View 1 (cartoon, one colour):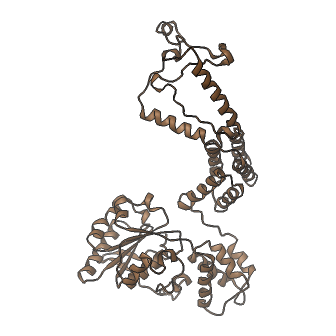
View 2: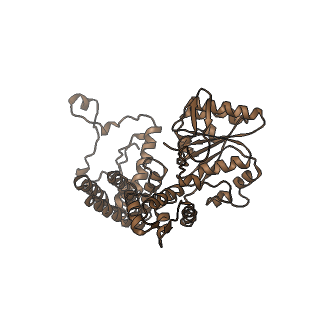
View 3: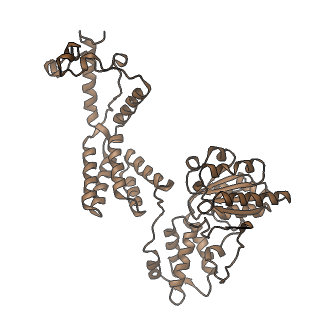
Length: 454
């Protein structure tokens, strides 16, 4: 695994402890284009104006050299490592970097030992931890005393939501800054710089840089790597659309199965269905497929949507979704995806009701918070004479023998929960008819001369 800058972990374990790798070219003289283009100051840094614009707290902290512990949260390739380096340089602080993927307790101790040495010399240390969410609780806790006493300034980088992945104690001592995917124009400006920095004379045909920027999906490092690969494949130093066909044919948009982007996109799909926006729902479905999501996972979630957001307003929705899931299982791609798309569009256009979902949650809450109420005698099973002698089933009214096949005034709850109502059908779709029927039956209960538990 590499760090946010695409380079190997900058710490190595040795008898002398942790040592920072020197910047610049390797022994062979090769340096990746992304490393050559790394900004050294905020004037060269692209994007993130929402946190680095004039007057913003982070900008003021960096400009003044008065740093605080912080967490940079954002997608890959948006400059988390670079921003940490710039901040440390501006504050004249020693910069140490750990990768949570490759490092353990020993590397953490070595880094803290170095920070203590610099502190004794009157110099601050910025300890940058890439992929900090990969550290377990005890590893994260190891930083706390040294953050509190000022031994080091902690800067963590993560692609995952810190509120889920980081300890509350560490979060409370750090300020979280959300970094955003770079805009197309930002990526294009980085690519223009990269083109000029390529060795030899390399030119890009019309629209080539724009196409690379679009394929990079907000990731500057990815864009630069694609540019460098295209330059290697370019004939006579000319990057053409044909060159890009070779470079981009296997490229996928960001998806990150199991991470924030994964859950953000399934959330967007679900909310689009709930909001009766079929076109948007279809877009997010295709985005997830394009990113490599298992269509069966989406099919399963679509079945959930049918019950949660459509319910009895249109009971056909659940059947259609189950059928689509089965088509996906039996036929696979691409026929299965088309069936799932059909189900998604149906759900988005169907009448909406969360009455079933709400009723289920309320009933579960009553069960979990209440006592284990006994089943009333008249509702108990009575298959044996002994049970009948104990009045199991006594007084039970067989609904089919009652007027309209409804035993008005009967109660099917434990006595303490009599007249509890969870299900409130909406006035849309089939539930409108269900609502009218339930209202009629409740009126019969009120006027009945027989009232159980009266």
